[in-house]
Length: 173
Length: 390
Image 1 (cartoon, chains in turn green, orange):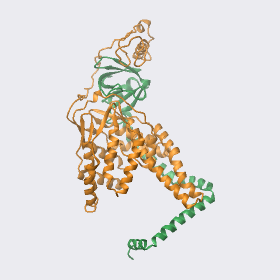
Image 2: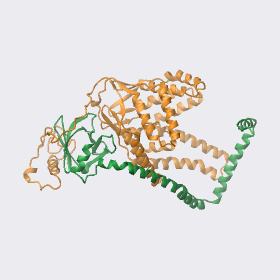
Image 3: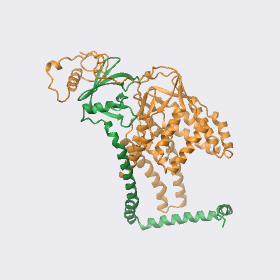
Image 4: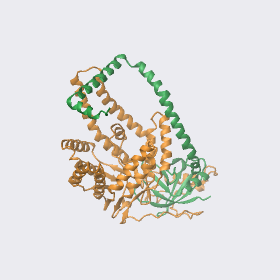
């Protein structure tokens, strides 16, 4: 099992990209910076993986608060080695990507099913409950407003300009 | 007594505690040793813990084959550089399908997390100088921003718009409240624009350094209100001057860490191209709009600088028209299902036509992140006041 990997380290304070070697341990990653030789230890519990979940992405591990340090590994096989060495960690396992196509298909079918269920059953049920609680006065007022609005538009259409427009838009018989 | 901090690498650790990160060196070394041994290792002896000094170790020789490192571009350096989009439409489609499912299942609440996933993917597949961008926003903060915008903007505005009519108020009162709603909403459009951009930039990083928008919201509200008024009064003729001033504002207030972007465009430079486009609009059946858009993009890029470098765009009208129209046709024919592929195509087109020329001293840029809430993002969702930026 390969335990040492080439990586890049970002300290979160400057844009300088520092070359590093990362060694996979049983409970932590040990990062050695190439320029200073400084060793940093990242316990697995403090690391979060923010990239490297999809094919083509580089692996990006972050540690710290909002402006965190980051470790970048371009080879996704690093994750497989990490998972093999420390199986209980929360990092993404690239081996699971193979099942994604089937899961996406299932998700698509489920989305269609839920959409149909919402449209045909849930929305009418909610509408029935809500309609029963709307005061009749509100409904009357809303109806009057719509009738008034329609009447105003209809009368506008009977002005000479409106009549010309409606005549033009009428399809030939 | 230690010389160098084992955690952050600070060079002058005067006593046992690092003045920079606050770590106690002896404890850190002890836990380092413990972690190095793993959870099933035998307990440490006093002898193993005793050394309180930490000597920077030279890079350990790899025990196995080590992947060849990607070439790290030297900095500062001259020449033409481009961003590249490395992702695929198929992957984005998979993300989209799962997003739709979870958004439906949660009655819309997951939409904020869905947006984050799409942005994170698009940025993580965008490469510049061998390094990918990163997105740091969260669904939770976007939901919070949406709720704030809902409570403090959407509900009051809707109530102001509807209640007088429902209560049967006189026509004058209804008209007055509608005018008030229009004015208030108009003020909030630029607030949303700048808030959304500020939020998105603050959550975007490259090489760990955040971008930021450092501008007073009120300055943009004044610019937007005045320019919108002038555009209306001049029947649209002020529009090219407005878009340049808006670009000027957004660009000059944008920072990458400690380095500011620059813009030296002038509004009147796009005036005659705009007039030409309007005159040709009926003759070209609207296609002259693409000619103007391409010209605008080239102009914006040519007048944008970053340190000693300057952007350049090679967008032409015909490819832009083909990209836009063909994408529209494909989206209609596929009922929107091709959206991920069309998004990827648009990004590739944008990056292929945008370059940055000249010296870039990127390594000297330092972190200067700015706080930004997601309320502007929430407002932009209500007002459809989005200026792009993924």
